Length: 134
Image 1 (cartoon, rainbow, N blue to C red):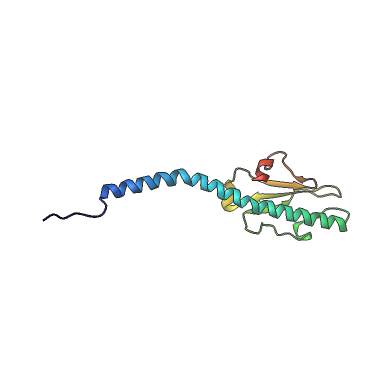
Image 2 (cartoon, rainbow, N blue to C red):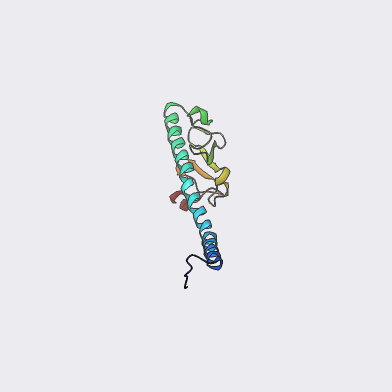
C-alpha cells in the first residue's frame, strides 16, 4: 500500500509566516509615509479654504478677521487631522494662519502648515514647498 500525503509541513508553514512578517516589516514604514502624505491634503485644503474666506472678509472690512469664527471656519480640519488657528493679530494688510497636525497625523515629517496673504508660508519651522506639493 502506497499512500501519498498531501498538505504542508509545519516547517513550510513557518517559512511562509516568516517571509510574510519580513515583507510586512519592510512595507509598513512606506505605507505609513503614504498615508501621512494623503492626510496632508486635509490640512492644506482647510488652510486654502480659510484663506479664501479671509479674503472675502477683508473685502467687506478694513482688516482681516482675528478669529476663525468670524470668517466662519472650524478650528479643526474636515477630517480632524489638523487644528487651525490665526497667529497674532491680523491687520488690514496681513494675516497668518496655521494648520498644526494632531492625533495620528502629529508624527508627520512636514509638521505645521502656514498660509498668509501672499499664499503658503515656508519661513521658519513651517512646512516647506515640497510638503505643499506632495
